[in-house]
Amino acid sequence: MLDIQTFDARRGGNVLYKALAHPLAAEALADLGAELRAGGGYAVFDPEAVAPALFALHPAMPAPSAYFVQDVERLGAALLGRAARPVTELPRAGVGCVLIAAFDAGRIAARLAALAPDMRFVTLDRAKIPDAMLTNRRAYLDRLNFATNFAFFRDENKLHTRVVGANYWSGYGAAAVRLWLRLFDASGAAIATWEENLPSGAGGFRIDSREVRARFGLPAFTGQLFIHALGVAGHDVVKYALDTYGEAGEPSLSVTHDANAWPSDRYAGLPAPHPDERVTLWVQNSHAAPIPAGAIALDRMGREAPVALPREVGAYATVALDVAELLPGLHWPAQIELRAGRHMVRPRYEVTRQGRTRIAHLNVERADLRPDPAIAQLSNLLGRGFLLPFPVLPPDRFRTIVQPNPMAESQATLPVRLDLFDAAGRLTAQRFLGNLPRAHDCALDLDGMAEAAGHAELVYDFRDGGEADGWLHGLFRYESRQTPHAAECSFGAHIFNTAMTWRDEPQSYSGPPPGLSTRLFLKLGDHERRSFTVLIYPASADWHPHSDTVFQLIGADGGLIEEARLAIACRGSAMVFPHEMFGEPALERAGALGYVLIRDTTCRLFGYHGLMDEAGGFSLDHMFGF
Image 1 (cartoon, rainbow, N blue to C red):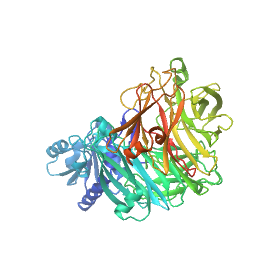
Image 2 (cartoon, rainbow, N blue to C red; image 1 turned 30 degrees about the vertical axis):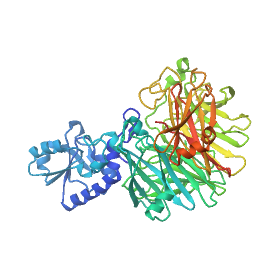
Image 3 (cartoon, rainbow, N blue to C red; image 1 turned 180 degrees about the vertical axis):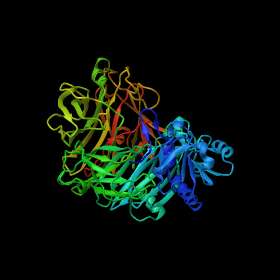
Image 4 (cartoon, rainbow, N blue to C red; image 1 turned 90 degrees about the vertical axis):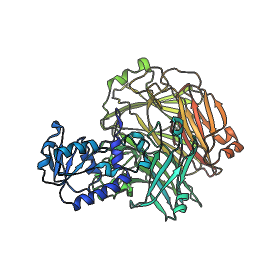
């Protein structure tokens, strides 16, 4: 496992990790490593415990001759076999050069120069990205300097990908946002680097693989796109929707949410294949350090017998791993756990069945969570507490299947119930799924339970005992009754629409809880593929009887074109198509970069979105808000 700190629930993301992992930092550190190697021995001074991550992410750096720290409690800590010595011994290190493992380290270098005046000092400032890419030049490790993310990106075999989003940073005061983009092919080679300016207002943007391939004269590729948003405000997260679509008779269509920008130890929510399916895990290395053979493994959830990938994955490379290669004979509804070793951001998987593919993402399996007995008592003040809402698509056209997913390393049991609601918010059915073990194979088909479109919710139910940690997740699979097409997505539970709070719930898009408002992004699609959303009004306790939901049609420049309103019943839902709500002329005015902003100041809605085509293809995943 990589010795790096990426994200935790209390402090958020580790900006130092992003600074060290940036592709431009990797290039600069490769040059610095070559210089240090040519100069003979050198020492490392590590005032802020940065060096372990530095050498983990950049193993090509030459090993130092000596390792020095200033914190007495860190004496004896090891770096590449060198025990940490007190910095007061630096003059007797026997080297002429010292690498100070810190950014903005001019003052540190001045202090050391007084201690060891004959030595040469270099700092991690050599690995800084250019000033022109910094939002805050006065503080290099400001989180807004590293609003970065990765996207799966492919243009191959009649399949294309499209990253779609909006300049939501303008709403927080950003005046001139642009994207710095680097495309890596399957081998990890950088095949294109460019910038794109975003509209000055809250307009939309898209990055289409067909257009990128034509612009740079590229061969077919499957790889990953590194996205760095420059000049941002408010949010340091790059959020997007990723469409995969076919052409020239290729019927595939799917959508998946943005990647989680922080590598994790483990991921879960990877389904085993049906006997007539192939499930491909896209192993995409997020770093300049190769993933060693054996560092990535798959395990049948709950078995605790991981099977390692026996080959190396190069820097920034992409490998298509057929899960049956490591876990032969394992079939749906078994679940698979990915031991990722912090080598990649949230991975994608692709299911191929009857000539069609669908792409979805895994979710972060938390290592920091433990069961909390307090969750069983939340009903006194928070009603049904944690809810995991998902759509029930019209049952005459679609099958809806739900599978609860263990999503924490410590989770041994999963006590859950399913509550089913019609569009008007009436509870129509309940099913206790049991106190499920970690290795369960429960996947509930709602055929016979749902008579009309609406939504369902997974909730905790302790009637047979069990433990809960608040990180309740599920996989939702939708199958067309008319075509071989299917879609699937996954997400986790939250507490919704109650004035009482518990820790960081109900979560807010900005500010402290309770989150009682909505701001969701809905792309528009085109004449071939119609955009739609399923909006759900979940409520842990009683809240407003109806939502006051505003749909704002936004043009390419961020300006408002038209507005429409909708009232959704508490615990109800609505399926909305923008072309029906606004009409074709208004969508034409919005253009290809237009979108719909869904706002509600009375309640927190949970949304899913996708596309539908006339041939029966469709996509579905949860929406993002800002």
